[in-house]
Image (tube, rainbow, N blue to C red; front, side, top):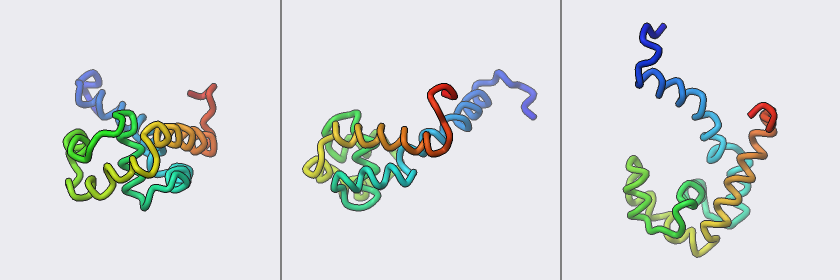
Length: 114
């Protein structure tokens, strides 16, 4: 038990523990994979990087590599900017939002519960 419940690190960890499952749905639920595959993205990583970076617009791989910081530049470069030639960021963002809602609904999350 944390004896210092207001310590920033413990607050951050508690927030992470509550939000990360919702965040993970955005990229890892079957609905997300189906939606991104449906746009024509090839393989998990292309869909992942397209969906996750979509709010930034059609940025190059170097921007995504810098912002996401923990992925090998080669991994990102295999996905971007090629993904933007298949489907634009607006389509990836729409697919991400709709598939996340569908996955959360399947899991029993409703607007009233949110």
